[in-house]
Image 1 (cartoon, rainbow, N blue to C red):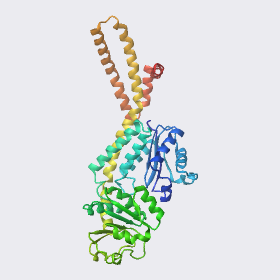
Image 2 (image 1 turned 60 degrees about the vertical axis):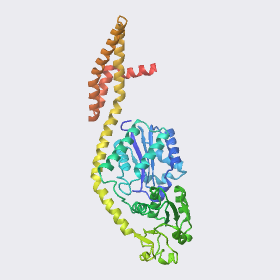
Image 3 (image 1 turned 45 degrees about the horizontal axis):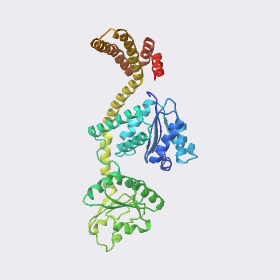
Image 4 (image 1 turned 120 degrees about the horizontal axis):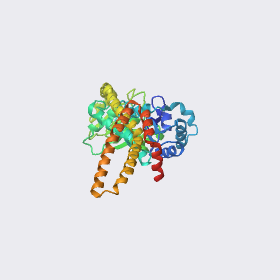
Length: 426
């Protein structure tokens, strides 16, 4: 398994949103792709990460399956022209490169919003899907649990996950604070541009709420509402939706304010309404607070809060990288030791065969107490004999010099022949 880890990656860094949407996978599609990968490629372990910002397939194989994986993505997504989008897929076919990339993605160094709070949960979900498909083995189990432990260290030892570092997440965080006394706040999202859509996705972090989506494109609103089980209101009915809502988030593009004092007319506001203007130019009149009960939050204030958090995260990056480097080194040592564990087992089996053959000559003449003593003494002797070669083999692994020592051990103890004998007995 050592030096066989690879990845095929498509991300927001070089891929337009419409292409990212085309190759995004839900859980059922991820399972289908994992089945196809196992059937059509020489792959022992695999993991699929699919979010709004990236679609990546990680796998363990001695061969490069970049072309095959892209074709299989096309099969699952029903894209006969998948080759036309090949330029967006990166091929990470170097073991260390793929391991490092998965660490960076999982911890949030590669996220569109640095230190993204959601990504580690998305990795855990991807891990569970792959485990359900029985395509996770010792290598990926160890790698992912190392990543989860590293993430805990980053949270506990750095400021990398402190605060809301995006406008959309900062908005949702503030809504959660403001509506804590509401049993189930009615939240209206008006406009589904990039920020509006991000807000909808981040609203998942508020446990109890009613969410209404209102957008000029009803198709986009319906698709997003279906994904999160939210409600859609046609754009022509936005004024009534505003009156019904406890929280209004506006990110609609308009030349002049869409929400004004006149929007509320003579309607009595019995409790506070919280309005968030995330539009540019602004879509809510700045004098809206003259209406009793209305409270307005502008993008500038929210952006300042997000920028402050982002600055803290950026300042923490060197510490995060140091923690990741330590974890990658430790995992690399384990991975190298895994490469020689079959040799160690063969050596132990070879010595055990010698031990059994020798003591069997004397057991016939020994009583039960003598036989037990002989067995114990020879076992202890064998453990002491094997201890030094095993330690030297593990040390050679860390230096990258295990191959020559493995060759010597094979010659000394006929380990390949020993392995064939065990297979034939089985």
